[in-house]
Image 1 (cartoon, rainbow, N blue to C red):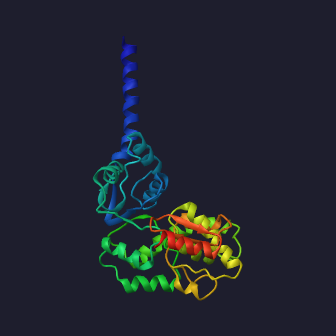
Image 2 (cartoon, rainbow, N blue to C red):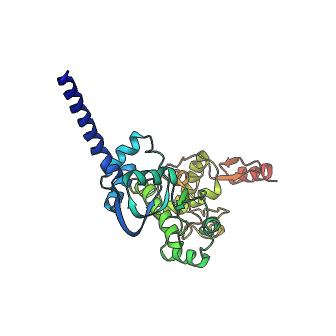
Image 3 (cartoon, one colour):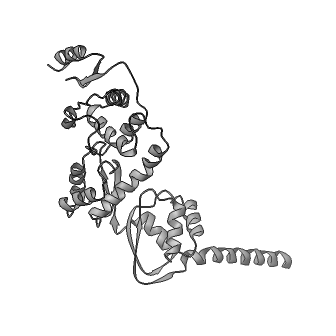
Length: 298
């Protein structure tokens, strides 16, 4: 009997020690002098986030934070935004704040459609960030040569973002998503560089609506360039007088248009129109093209 009681005490003490070992780092606070601002951005992995929190001195163990969040099914409930930490902060209280309470400044969601011009992008963002300045935004885009490289997507931003933050965010996504694709691609003749791809893709955004039609139109325009024929596209009227591509992108194309340029479909067609019904109509000869105009645009 005494042996049983002794064994029970040993087990109880062992369990208590185990609980204390786990609980101490969870509830033991870190003292923060002043205030510390920490931002959780879109697309960051839990591993990266936990490591940053440890580097910033906000948790003692990134591994324990990940384990705690995963064990409590909170690893997918981390809220994006800007947090303010001050005073005594334990791992438990921090985990509760980033999953349940939420940030001091939640991120704003803004969607930029494919084929938006830089001016249209400004007009979209200024609705969420009313302090943005159009002249400053345009000047930064021009001086950094980023026309065509403001990648259309859905973005989450802090209310404190300024013009440079927005432009940097969009151009960084462009580098991440478009850069590797163009770099590894064999460019279709007569294109020779990345800017050619982006300019032609920006034309496709205005000339065709579907991936299928974009690829066919890409093949037609590349053939026109190859035989020395002006592009003659309505979205860039100078192409009726001057041969070759416009000097810069006319908008900011998305991945569908960019991949269409890199994977054109060559046909016997040399002409095309978008009919009043929104459908594309193709022609091999100029006479057939004129008949299509009379039939589908009049």
